[in-house]
Amino acid sequence: SCRRCPGEVELTPWKPLAEVVAMLPPKLGEQFLRHESTGEWLMHRSLPQVRRCSLSPEAFRHFFQLRLQDVTDELRDRRLWDLFLRSHGRWTLTENQALWRSESASQTLEKVPHWEQHAENSLRTDIVVKRPSEVIFLQGKGKVIVDGPKDIVHFLLQALEGITDPDDVTVDPRWDTARLRDDNRF
Image (tube, rainbow, N blue to C red; front, side, top):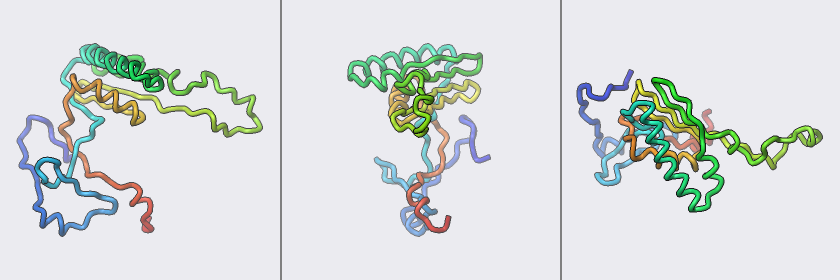
């Protein structure tokens, strides 16, 4: 495994020279990134949806609920009703994890799709079901993972800012999926 545990031997950061990067052929769809302030090449980056947390599941639930209330108040004040409804959820709490899921009622405005009334037209385009959102805290790993549509994930990450830290495990560089899709080799 190429992952390292926090607190183990500190690794020397790998930073290729600009001349070396210029000679490297990027993989299909790969984009090399530069650090905004130093200008150094970044070969890996952390995922913003993965955060670190050292609280207990009960404490995480308490503090996240307080911060989420501030975010929902902001959404209500800005009259972003769709996001406001989707920022309400329910908790599942165990001794090792805390799981917050958005309420299923906020996934669609249509409470009961009346499919039988539209039997001749089985493909209804007026019903839009949005993906639910989840925030899971795994105490054993010390990680918080946020999943859901981009618009609500932004506000969930905003609620996590005061109680979590950015993840310290980096992943592969960015990939241009459009370039990958357009390639004729696949």
